[in-house]
Each structure stands twice: as structure tokens, then as C-alpha cells.
Image (tube, rainbow, N blue to C red; front, side, top):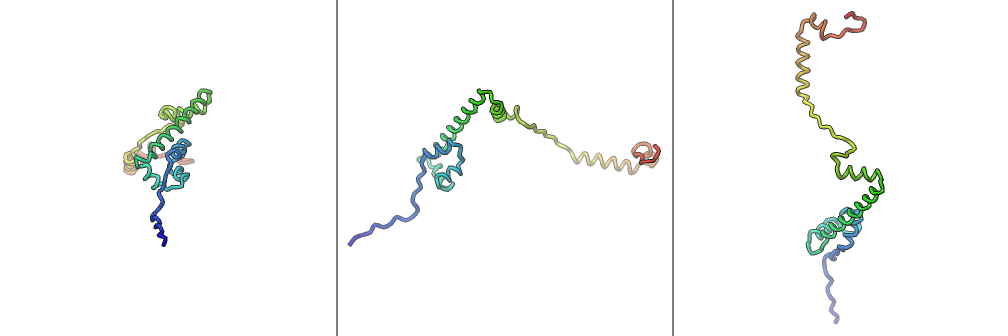
Length: 146
């Protein structure tokens, strides 16, 4: 009689190719896009990335660096061709404090002080005699002599 080998239980192990991760990261894809391209979930990818033996974390870093180096070199080429938009983009992103398109103005307004002053002026007007208001605080109405 023939003996059957028992089937292995559980999920099949997921193998993530570090070279493919490096290539996808060099194309500018984010982690979720890389996960979708590889057909794995973020949890599985993150588990493999945290393991030192898989080399996924290094591949991701190297790929990201390669992509950034490529884009930077192309940007520098367009800057050398005197492309104003490329120059402006570079300056706005490398030195945003000096080359920002918009300026931020931080102003603090003490509303409590403003309201207190307004209340004081109102109480002065309410308690002043009518003849004192006639000449100073009251504005003449239409058709009324000053």
C-alpha cells in the first residue's frame, strides 16, 4: 500500500525580492505602491523590512537614494540650460525661507485688551453729561447744524 505524504498546513511563505523593491523605490513609488506592485500587504512588507536578514530596508533606502540622485541630476541639467522654472523650483525647495512664494505674517491681537478699552470708552460716554457729548463725541445727523 502507498503512503501519502501529508500536505503542509498554513500559508505559503511570502518571498519579497529586494532587487524589485530597489527598482520600484528608484522609480519614486511609495511603500504602499510598492506593496501593491508586489502583491503583498503593508504588514507583510513591514515584517520583512524589519528583519535584517532580508535586506528589504537597505534595498528601499538604496532605491530611494538612486531615484533622488537621478531626479536631482536631471534638475541640475535643466538649471544649466537656464530654465527659469527649474531654477525657481530648486531655490524654493532648497531655501524656502529666502525664496518662498508667499510670506507668513504672524500677528498676535490682544482681543481682551481691545474689548476692555472699548467698554471703558462706552462707560465714559454713558456717564458724561449731555452737553459734553454734544460737541465732542456725537456726530451730527443729516440736516442738523453742527
